Image (cartoon, rainbow, N blue to C red):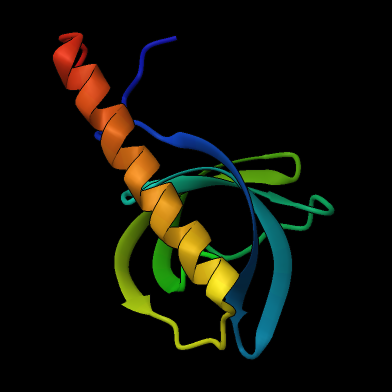
Length: 117
């Protein structure tokens, strides 16, 4: 398969909420993620609008996103902008977020050293 994404996505399992506007929000799961987009899975195949808000509490961010593709109960979204979400978090969540950031940085560095990106 020809990769058309600008950034490599990491496999993740994040709980999230998709805001479809008009006060309607739907729980979903983020299956892969980069700072430029994500693969989002919903519990059923009810469609969402082309532009949504995606809040990922574990990342502490909310994204404005455009749905690029939709298949069954999954969608690929491209982020337009991000904003920090102020949610109460535990010390464990903060340490986990920091660890995930460091892991991404190390993976990027390994790819650079191997000449893959």
